[in-house]
Image (cartoon, rainbow, N blue to C red; front, side, top):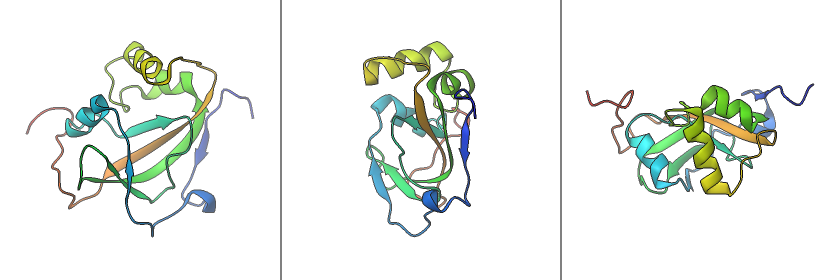
Amino acid sequence: MPETEATAVTASDDVMMDHHCDPYVVRFHPKMTQAHVEGRKCCTTRRHPLGRIGQVFTDENLPGQQFRIITGAMMPLDHVRDLAYDLEGFASQEEFQAFWTEVYGSYLGESIVYSHWYAPVLGSALVLKRGGHDE
């Protein structure tokens, strides 16, 4: 497979599947916590895997609000910037790249990263906004 293609991780992949773990706490930058609250963020990309499909986590800044990982993929960082910057909570590709550089100290577009898509767990403590707007 060429290095530029994304590798999807599906629920059938035993190594990534886990429905029976207690929620764990994940550290998010305060700007990303705000994107959670505003309903602008449903994806997080890390240099290492965050968790397994089905696992539940909380944002350390939002105690009680749970999120469940629904899928994941390994891909070049440039693909995340170009295709998922908005799902990451950013208004533009440039904003995503600048934030990544701020957090990690550099931006290497060809480096392989781990993207995780997740959804709020119904019944969690926080009522999230939809589409970044109050209803």
